Length: 229
Image (cartoon, rainbow, N blue to C red; front, side, top):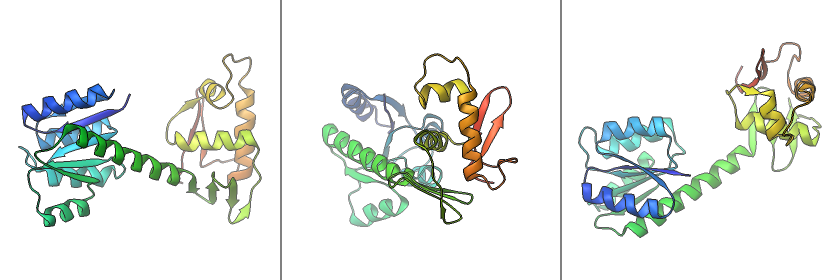
């Protein structure tokens, strides 16, 4: 279930937005001041943020700037009584995804937040289809994989495994998890399937397969994909 963070200090608006978003199946978290809202956003990692401009503790402008500096893909919709064009331009320059002026319709605000989330997801999906790491360029939409500019031929399961690693970068993944999510196995007679496929990815994609930089073994657990060196 998606989570919406509402950073707003007016109890009436908090209640109205909580009711509107929960009626559509969202989980709603309320923060009453700017500093708390930014800290909560970092912890919660919501699908979208509704942010008031006039907040105690830290201004909405600073909160928006802060959120976008560490998480550019988090949609932020500004909610404010200020309607001057200059302020709207400033907020968009800070990275805000949309701007709704008070008084407002909770239903319209919800529609704008949902639209911002869809745009972000579409953009993220497009970015995720084309990945570069080390000497490798991977274009999953075209199914083209290059090492130092030369084509690399990957099997269907090698492609699925590579994509899974990239989508879960920097996280330790067990062999059982890979068998379940990549191969669809529900029982695990052997985990050698994973080891063999990772070995093949290393041979095709690592500069030195004997000393892998990207596809790292986590002894006794599984593997971890690291995009950097």
